[in-house]
Length: 432
Image 1 (tube, rainbow, N blue to C red):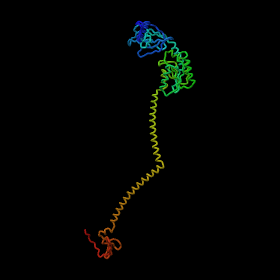
Image 2 (image 1 turned 90 degrees about the horizontal axis):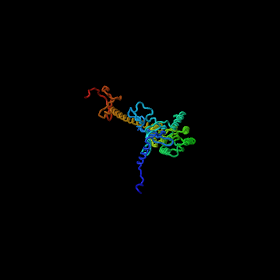
Image 3 (image 1 turned 90 degrees about the vertical axis):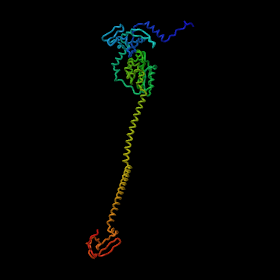
Image 4 (image 1 turned 60 degrees about the horizontal axis):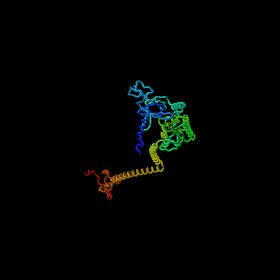
């Protein structure tokens, strides 16, 4: 094979740059008309959105420096179309604040290829309003009508059941929305039964099928709550959930309805009329069931609280039982007998101690009296050589004056008595 017949093999970056050169060379400046969707405003100040019509969609980036009324400093602004420096109060249309989903606009700029995504896009230099798109007008008209009829009133909104075990889901039977919803449901809560009521979620037949699926849920009377979910998409793809038929079906639900349609920035009539609005299908599941870790933590908290209450209660009961036991012991016949026995034993001891004390005292006093009596015995001195003289009348002689001569006396000595008569009675001084 000759070298001339070998095909050139492009690298990705090489062919992307080639396409970028072609696109930018063919479309250096174009005007494009369409309806705004997927509008995004990051903190950088740049604006990203899509232009669409019935046939196609074109991504657009509108850099901050190209937006009308971009600032040079705190006091000056310039027009990116002419470079003219502006002054005075800014108009309501300057900048990008007026831009919104659903707006019909004209964009002027250049087409280019964005290599990191391999997608072509428009870099806008001028954006002008052409009026509100048909879909957006229809949305606003139906919203105003239903609002006037009170279908959006907060007073009619019902809270979601706590830990629901029977959940009906109205959505497409396949797709990311139902997969994400079921995945989150399997990871959270305490277990439940989920029934999917399939319906188209896009296209002309979708509103009727969604309303029919909802009525089937109501007819069965099984579900505790109904979840109406769909993944994200441009405004026209969400039109089934902006249909009055679906709005009326949600409104007549006998149980709470949670709506999780599109992404967080998307708002549909179904979101407004449902009892609870979720940002996404995944968020809808998260609102229905709490994380199991939270449930486990709650169980632990309840267990610890129960233990504290039980311990405190048990302590009170033990104290009461002890008090009642003491009272029962005090009031029972057995207790009364025991107390009497204790009292008798105490009194016996006291009596014994008193008897002992009295006996010792009496013995001591008796000994004292015995000694004293012995000391008063008139015959005691006789053993020491003394003698007693007793007169005839039986009285003892105490003085010489008590006798006369010839009086008879009995002389008592220690071992007997001697009879004698007085021959002489004369007082004399005793020997000192």
